[in-house]
Amino acid sequence: MTKHDSLIFDLDGTLWDSTKACAEGWTQGVRQVNPASRAFSPEDLASIMGLTFDKAVEKLMPHSKEEERTKLGALCYQKEMEQIEKMGAALYEGVVDGIESLSQVYPLFIVSNCLEDYLTLFYQMSGLERFFKDAECFGRTGQPKGHNIQAVMKRNRLKNPAYIGDTSGDQRAAIFAGATYYHVNYGFGTPSQECERFASFLKLTRYFVDLSK
Image (cartoon, rainbow, N blue to C red; front, side):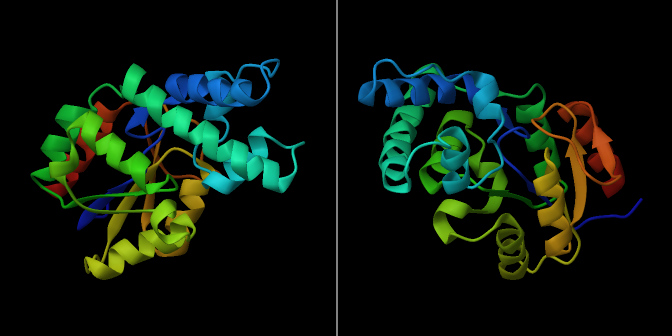
């Protein structure tokens, strides 16, 4: 097993699940414009987790024109944020204690395809910001995840980071950036190549704590 000098985490599907609140927000958004619109389900939102915001809106609204999609997507995102604040989001079991334990033996980071205020909301609602040294997201840079992982590696002088995520896109981004990819099975996707996989955050925590010794 290879030792790592840092751990970089994906957000959605890795640290928490906000799909119920997001689905409610998107449903409210589309129905504000068209009351007859169908409701979005948590599964609908799970299907776009890991995509950049523009790609997520395109997938959820494939038949709308680009200008209409942009405006409606912005409205739905506003409603999404309101619902996360109201309903909350579920941190996966073991994340709170695990992040605290891991922060004692590794510098921790987040790289996500979310927008910047979504990352801020995660920090506020989880209370975990103090354990992370740095973070980057699509909303801040407009860059793909692989480039954002590289940016975090460069500015923090990371030589051999682990990237922990839950989709094949996360795996591709980690490989592009030169980070070793680890997969959580409880998230929203599957890896496309063989890699170390964890059934729970508790098992992930034990693995990396043992690896640090």
